[in-house]
Image (cartoon, rainbow, N blue to C red; front, side, top):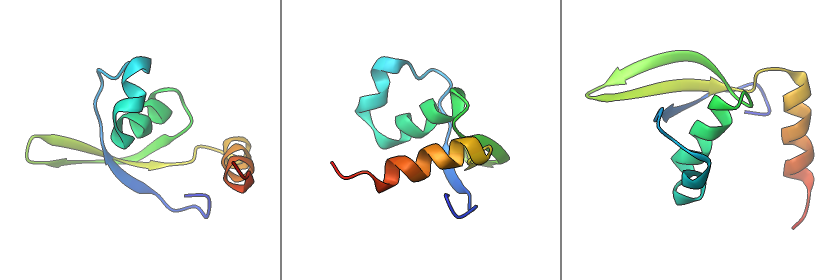
Amino acid sequence: MIAGKEIKKPVHEDITYADVKESQDNLWNFLFFTGYLKMTGQLLEGNTVYLKLAIPNEEVRRIYQTRSQRKY
């Protein structure tokens, strides 16, 4: 995504902050609903809604770049 690509993830509108640690999909949803990702498209597969997600702007892209370069 840092290189400008997008990802496809299922969307769950009922995610709360407490749910973020339960699954990776919950984290993607949280990042989308808080503005750290933007929707570039939407797909319906069966009963599941998938969003195509991308980084919304250069300011947020720099945040992701900085976080990915840190060693923990």
